[in-house]
Each structure stands twice: as structure tokens, then as C-alpha cells.
Image (cartoon, rainbow, N blue to C red; front, side):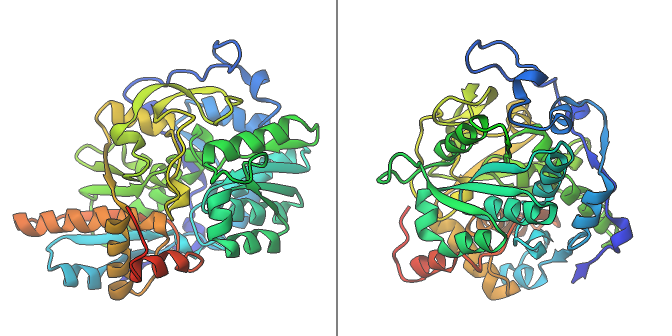
Length: 415
């Protein structure tokens, strides 16, 4: 069972959660002075339109027409009820998922890659640099820059560069240039933090370049709220008032924010972040100001962190291997408005295989974290004999991650 919206029902404005947060966000700090940063400090990295969105307190932000024109290539995305999974679990819960895998890049990431490429094009910036973990963000930005005629330089975490060659090929097909990170240490497995350092260092060293970030920052989560806004409309079509729980996998927070932030004002809707046990930022990290990158080049952000020098194990869910979390997500968890849970790698792949063998679709390793939590929520509903409405973000497909499933199915996957 699935619910589709016509292209004319695509949201024309992003939802800004800032007015609904328990308290205003603390400002980012300059990496050298430790003083609050201003727009001029960010101008070498971002176009002014994105800097304005970063600090906006307006309840909504209009989506530019050229961005809507591109988003309509695949949006609105379907809302699907996982009836076969429900039957396999024997649960009275109703499980819905927002299928972001239908985008050209196969994940939610183009929702922000497209506006970021557009705003840089408008400002006359011809080249963007970025990092990527599993390759989904690098793929999305390569896709977006190809549409707006920009160059794209991607620093890919070395462990993923070696594990996922087809992601590199996809980026190169869209015109992106891809190198393994860290660039100065070929024996290092890399991390998102070190890849960010490489990308920022590149951008600030050239007058023709800006930096684009796929997660964490406020404007990135803002762009992703099209997911939750569409889901609200589709749940009404499905006859549901509101979900009992909204679930998303969490690395930096963009996919999680996209599905959950439009539900923040709704009392009684639980919000659940799911992260890997090998990189348990929200569940075992501490709240503090920390750098977003390993080298300490970025502004310091108020967030839950494992420390910017933390190098996570080389799990297959490369997109979740990040030491920190979005300030917005961190603020919600700190205030108790959002919960967090962590799972070991074997448990999430078990859930991914169960989903594939019931619903048919093969999820990305990152997505299996949300599926694991959705299954566990459904089993609790079964134990209690309660009907519950569970909504999760199916953030991407796993068709370029089959080596991970090969490791799981043949006993080579370790926790």
C-alpha cells in the first residue's frame, strides 16, 4: 500500500524548526578567537543565502522556483505501508516509511544538494568541494552540480572509497572528481571529520570555490524538511492523524531532521534517533562546543560529540561514522524532546535482510538502523497488544552496498 502526492503538492516552503526549539541555539564560535561568528566569517565557505538560512528564525523559508523544478524530477516521494513486514512480525502496529531511495542518487541527499548548488550558482561560484562518507552525499552533490554547470571535488573517506567503488563511479559519471581522504596519509582509514578538513582546506585555498556540507548545519536540515512535510500530507491520505513515533537513522542528522522536525510541534509524537553502537554520539557522547572536522578548521558547534579526533571503526554504514551531531538534533535530545538508541552492526543488517525478504527492497546500511528501531517498536506494540503508528525514513537503497550484505550473509561482518 502506497500513497503518492501529485507534483503540484510538492511543498513550496521549507519548515524551520527554530521557533519551536525548547531554547534558542547557542551560536557557533570562530575556530581561532572562540567568539561568536558572523556572516563575514562564513562568506569564504558559503553563499550569503545559505548563511541567512543558517540563522533564520522565520517559521518557513520559500523554496526557489528553479530548485522546485529539479526536485519535481522525483518528488513528492511515496509513503509506503510495510504490510508484509507487519504480517511477518505479527504486530498490531502500522508501519509506514517515506521512500527517499527513488531520487536519482538513491537517497535523501539531493534534497539539500540541489538548493546548495543553486545558491552557489546564483552567487557566481563555479566550483564546490565537499566530503562524503558512504558516497551518497558525494553522489547527490555531483548530480546537483551537473545540473547547474558547476565543478565538484569530493573527498571520500578512504575506507568507503575502497569498500564502495561503484559510488565513486556514480560520482564520476555525473562529472564529480573523487579522491580518498585523508589525502596526506594513505594508510589511514579516514573519517568524515578528516574528509571535511580536506574539503574545507581546498575551498578556502581557492578564490573560485565554496564548500558544501551534506549534514549537521541548520540550513541542511531545513532543506530536508520536505520529507516530513510530505509525510504529514500522506498520513492524512492514509487515514492517520499523527504517528506515535517518528524514526530516522542518525549520523550528522540530516535524514533524521528531514523526517522528524515538522513533527516537533505535535504533542505526543515521539522522535527517535538511531545510531551505530560503534559511533554512539548521542547515546554516549557529551554535549560541548567542538569542531566539525578533525583538523580544527571549521567553526565550533554546540553539539553532542565523541571528540573531533575520534576515528570510528570502518563499519559499512559509512554515512553514520561522524563524531558529532547537528546542533538542532543535539538540542532536541538534550531537552528530552527526542530520544536516541544505538545498535550493533549485526543487529541492523539482520533487520535489513528481514525487510528485504518481506518488502522486497534492499536498504542502505545506514537505513537499516531505522528499520531495526521500527521493528523493535512494532514488537513492543505486539507485546503490549497496542495499535501504534510507526513512521520511519527509508533514507536510501543498498544496491551499491551489496558487499556489506555479502559480508553479513557469509559471516564476515563483525561488531
